[in-house]
Length: 346
Ligand code: NAD
Ligand code: DAU
Image (cartoon, rainbow, N blue to C red; front, side, top):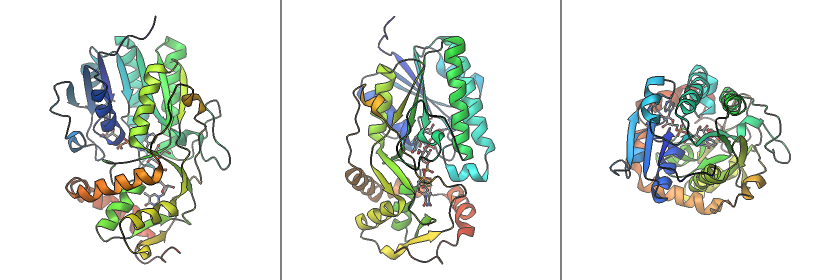
């Protein structure tokens, strides 16, 4: 049977960075009802949904994907689930991995169980290119082995295995996307690009792990959301789709670009001790998704300029997010990395 138009979609983690943009996209696409289930961890905030919370098509539920009662309430009447909810920061997974297993693995299991029970048309699990591990040359294809190398990536890979097991064991129509590094407005300032921008705007240095020559492929958040929608509507159940941008940049170049856009002092960029087990490079081949008709639209320089402008104008948003808890995390993660006393990058 063909796919019927979606009537009610459950978006977990919809008060986070990519999830909140996805909620906006669904509303722009005239999806009749959107249910957001979010635990509002340090990374989630109703501020991320500020412009859509009053929309009568949006129902926000404060709850945990690992709590069957919360999921039962949220999923009622839904014909699709898009699972963004996760612990997402690699550095935090190195400091305290337990929450990553609880939410990313166990929480996904709870969602799968409930999705099977209500019989959704589609269950799209948002995964990451990090599951392949570092790709020093070339680009990973969907059938390549998974070799996650940090606790965050390992939890995402574990979750994927459970997702596929519900396809092969029970026929739940699952889809998995493996997206590359995403950036744009409303990204919590622990991540590299918003950290660089908000540090510079607060007169603080930009910490570069190690030599700064690690490469990431940078995808603008709206392009990532369109890719997920494309897979939700046109993807084949049981399949995986890489999402890439083919816009690789070494970290040091990204930091320099941010410095230029803010007319800041290049000496604000400082090398600090590297992230343990730091993956040198990620890269995915996204031709399978391109064959469904998707292509990224935002050149990196344009998306970065837009992002910097947004943070410049939204000090209200990011100062609220850089609260006491953020300061504690910052001290824990960067305190013994000698941020201000390091040599400036040349
Ligand atoms: P984020 O950290 O900004 O948001 C995560 C959201 O999930 C937050 O709103 C948080 O409150 C919520 N959440 C966490 N634990 C929860 C739980 N137990 N129950 C309910 N809600 C919970 O993350 P993001 O960057 O928007 O990433 C979203 C998804 O995309 C994640 O699954 C991540 O692995 C994946 N992803 C992210 C990127 C990226 O570069 N940001 C790239 C590829 C894939
Ligand atoms: O590749 C997709 C993944 O991208 C997502 O699955 C993750 O959820 C997301 O957090 C991101 O992971 P990264 O570890 O690549 O992103 P992060 O923004 O933490 O770091 C980007 C690069 O910048 C990485 O090579 C580490 C480096 N970095 C990061 C921070 C926070 C620094 O040099 N200094 C920093 O202070």
